[in-house]
Amino acid sequence: MTDPYLYGMNLNSTFIAKEYMYSSFEQRLSLIRGLMDSRDCHINNNMIEIIQIEKVLSYQIYELLLSLGIKANIYKKNNKYHIKYITDLPICKTLTKLVELT
Image (cartoon, rainbow, N blue to C red):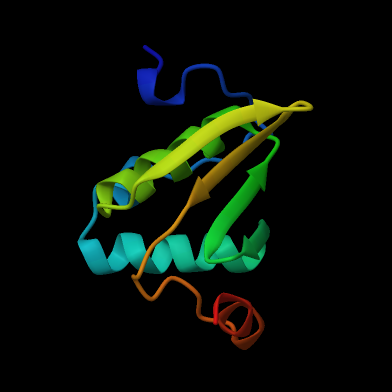
């Protein structure tokens, strides 16, 4: 039987494993930091936006943010998923992104 958690994905899909989605607060925060550093991420007036093309990963990032107590919005525009949020949590770990936030 197929895992319903992986419904709608193919062999080339990128996703976050269940174990990481439900891990400790610090591990989930670290995961978001890594995703911000490796994905198309923009910061404007303290509003952070992550842009994805994969639906499953987009909704997982959205769910992950909510699980950290971060209010976020997600919408689709031009076949891309946009996740926007504002937080005081130490999300950024690269100097470039930290400078953009200040």
